[in-house]
Length: 480
Image (cartoon, rainbow, N blue to C red; front, side, top):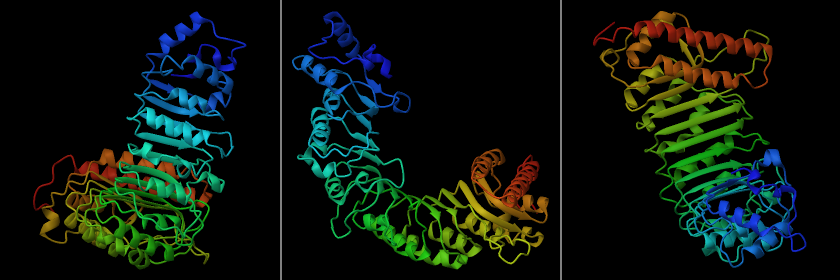
């Protein structure tokens, strides 16, 4: 419910000197009894919601009458007060989700903040979801006097919102150590900047999903340090974004991949998002550094993205992926930048990925439904059938997108793709391609790059149009 539910109390200071009218208080209590969801639009209202002294006055009024909102289940986008008296009043036995936003830039070193949060969890045994946005108290959980109050916590999100942020905003190692002992914590989202790499602990035994934004300064990455301390046999999904303020090198990627494979051998979904790759390397280097991930035999979803930098894939890379992960359902590889050309000659586009890789994926990943790759080079001689398998392929891939495609013979390529992936949905492929391609076009780029994007966009859409023409008639077994 928006802020106007306070019936004009936004700019009113209530106290014994300015008491609320008993009839108005009765109307408010009657309305408050049925409120289940409470939210404030902090982007619009700013910080001036209700004064601390008003909350103190309301607390005294409610001292003998129970919670202010007895049916409250969700608190979203709440701007806490400095005293945190409001949090105590929002404590309801039926509370399920608590979402706190703080734009005060004040690091609360007293006990009011941790005690108020602890009180809410004590009063609400069903409170399992906690989100903290821009709260300048990275040591909050380290200051909790009774961590057992949080044993029911299942979902925790800590978002500093602005990167880089002051170090005090990130969870301290002491706070992480407390969180690692929570028995029900299954879903964790945090931005990480470790303040003490010498403290060792192992925990987080119940994690199912983990999302990390690595904001640290370690060359090897704070995410690598953190993952070595996760010992959950249930971890199914891992999302990792690297420090947006620091370049990431290939030398840091191998220990990261090794730690992922060792810490979560049962992983099913892996999202790796690298903002900047500093050094350019051939495809074989990428294959080498990700090799430890091949131990993840249950992987069904892989999203690998490099926003800036110079990286390429090849037939060998995709063939190795297909052989290592036969259970893949979705494979997305996005390399935003093309290799720079410093010779002054015409730009050379990658030719390292061909239909050979798609045939290998079709053979080895029978459950794959979504495939996005950064580049594809198709020569006429590559479009011919390579054996009985392709002629009788029943692969159910439904979505295929290629960011940069160079095709010499469009119709021959369309026929080849029809044989490799006979059930491909061109409408879904087109929609998915346009979402990603047009989204990438929003980034600042030179005129040359804009012309390249336009060229590749037209080329892939023309190929899908040609493929759609051949799909009007179902493919026959043994067709040539």
